[in-house]
Length: 229
Ligand code: 6PG
Image 1: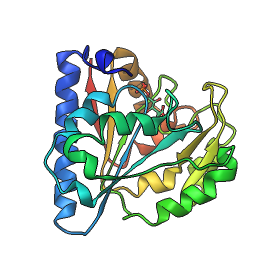
Image 2 (image 1 turned 90 degrees about the horizontal axis):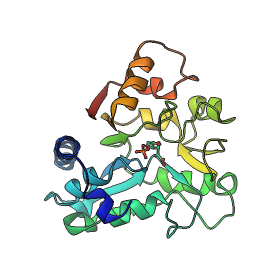
Image 3 (image 1 turned 90 degrees about the vertical axis):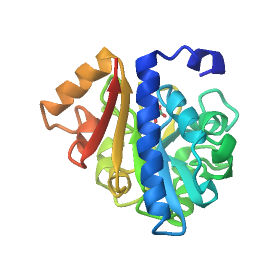
């Protein structure tokens, strides 16, 4: 999303982003008082931009914060669809520029080839993560746990950190953190906006088939819901 597009965020969405940033910053500050380094996991997509911008301005010991994504599109870091690019442009700015970012991609041609190297990279970080901020798509996917992906069962069941994912709904192959590694986090937040996503979430809460709406796998974490119209 471009800077000008993100400036058009409605007041309620901006307020929501500010509240989420306050909550995540508070969680990081608590954990930073107890441990040397802390890990924050964030999502890509379009929703997080105002949250990233607000969080980036918070005064924290950012030099002791590791940041990683919950999933990534297998594209170059400079590609417009890169979640790493989004994080660098909007979160790793101002005070937060001192945080250490850990990318989910490698020089390999495919996520299948790169997944182990990324998992080894992630294993060096301070688990459990202090917080994971999830997003959700209109099909109930979160991270890259897509209902129509052949790798969904694996991503929901493996103890490995990463899974290479293909979905007919998205243009590029992806890499995702597995449900079990995402579950490990101390705090889970879901950041969604709009009536369509509220309806999907309501549907998810009314049933328990995780393969139909993968967000369900996090509904009992517990999951703090940050929603605005
Ligand atoms: C990604 C994500 C993904 C995202 C949802 C919501 O790389 O796309 O991490 O899980 O959170 O698709 O995306 P929007 O915020 O763009 O609606």
